[in-house]
Image 1 (cartoon, rainbow, N blue to C red):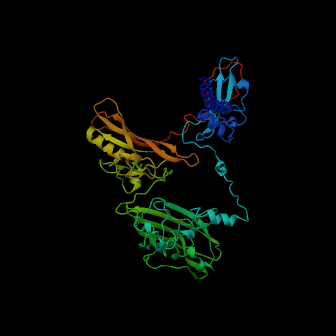
Image 2: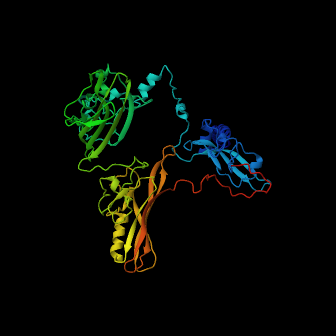
Image 3: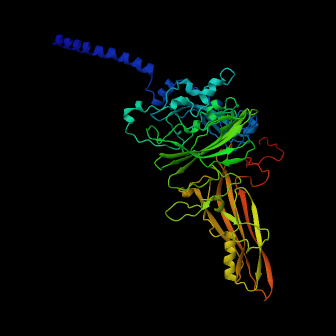
Length: 566
């Protein structure tokens, strides 16, 4: 029995020895790795070194070599400056927020210290998002490639590369090969969109313009619905005028326009008119425009050279060009002429619509009339085709007689403050009501508009782009009030980039001023002045002359402290 017990004990010992031997091997592994680290720690441990030193970044450092108020990261600020701060305008500065892990600079103020001190901490910030950038290993994206500076050796190459409308393609690449179209695009419907170059059978519709200097470059394409007007200089000579293509009418009309991009339907450019200009500048319109006049030498003069071309394109609302016309100005040069100035224009009109001239693109141009009209419910703005008769005021006459001046109007021109008027002779026989209506018609005209375009190129269908005219009336308390003055105030502002601001009208107010008409004794007369005025107010300019909008700081300082900030 004792031998059996010893055998069982030996077997149990042999079974437990492997288990005990395995336990010590697991413990060193756990102790070497430590407890399982959280995902944030593992991500921070594996993240690459930061590319940007956030401790040197400071987005509120605006002044050069001066301390910016409440900018705790400004290196120009001293401890004395920090003691005057009330808060840190930028409490945290980080790099790219899309990185999985990055450094973050924390700025704060210890207001309990005497004097207050700035506290700076640099911590590791982990992005909790699953979709984050682990490493920014694309070094080319970390900086801009330096631009190639033009020199005498590479100037022609750069001009050829960047002188056209598109930098990625040469003008020859506009050639269309309809036979090599992608079969998958064969069933697509193409249309012209705004700004797309108008294609022709061999390239695109050219609208020469100056590129680097004032000399003409024929690589400028005409964009669809982009009204343009250019002027440039062309080198010419009498001996070679017949060989210069750019001074011949055929250069501008011999290539048909594609009705829509990538189509076989073509639209020929028709000659609309030809005007001949003499050497002294006098112009004559030719009766027949169906004959193409080519440059030729006559009595030591080169005649029929192109001085100007005006294209007019008619299109549909589907983006298809259906008509194209060109109006030419031809001139002559003598042997002394070494160059000529050419002018080019292009305009667009939708079919079955009446074109209305613009007063700017997009902002108003000083000296051009304000565009105005009416808005019947359910339609767009209705305008008079003559923009000079859309918004008008009374025009002064030589005799200053109001009754004789009825119907004489002058347009309201943008940026021009105007005053006009006349004198009305009132007799005892005049009645109040008919006289009131006569004076209203005299001041406001027969059809005073309801809306004014906010921009010089506002479209009639864009109703929200038009400003309603606010009507006011100042009068006295009496039985008979007659209007004696119309005051129009136009408030406008500079809109868009500071480099090229555009004039935008934001408010128009028309105020009628009335006065009391007292009954005159029989046989007596009275003369009263009737005035109209227009005032343009730039609400984007400072309220006070010479005022500069410097930032203000609401900080109470000791009376003998010199404040070092601007």
